Length: 114
Image (cartoon, rainbow, N blue to C red; front, side, top):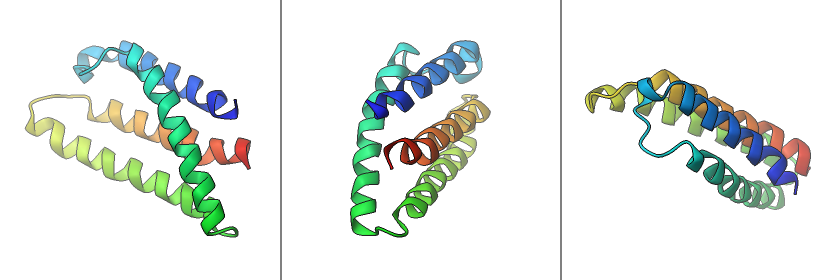
């Protein structure tokens, strides 16, 4: 249930960003998919977090946060490099979404689960 407490708001905010900036993003999927994706990703993220806590009890939480921030950074750089090559916009919007997901699943989820 705690996973839904993070996944639903992250999904709703992602869908709102996609609807609000759909022209800039050139959304490849309908915004309704964002909610479903966030919920599914939340359960996967919870599993990864619990595995990291079991593997590294004292440093698992900080490793998990750094993993989330690192993935957000890599995906954001990929958006700024890759999207212009495909003649698409939306790199800034995808960066905001990446940071939203990193904050929701990398920082808030461990606070609720832990």
